[in-house]
Length: 107
Image (tube, helix red, strand yellow):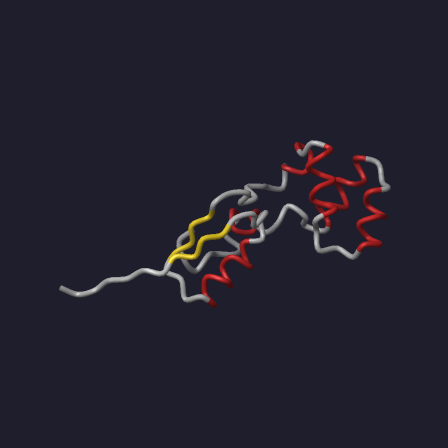
């Protein structure tokens, strides 16, 4: 009987940064990814639906420089939403939904 082994990558809290998850799966030579939560199922219409708390969270915990975060946080809600959209703060999920990007292993 042949020994069959699979390598799984367990991640959570990717917040829509699926390229990183996919790259990590390739780096660890994983056969599949198990995602335990905070996947980031956002689409382009999500920006307007975000609560004030969620929008602030996205901005504060983004990779933007501190000065840019402070600038955006000082804007009114509509301008914050626009800035968040322009900076793609909900992650890369929309690009995967649209087929612009694909995952190399099952998630």
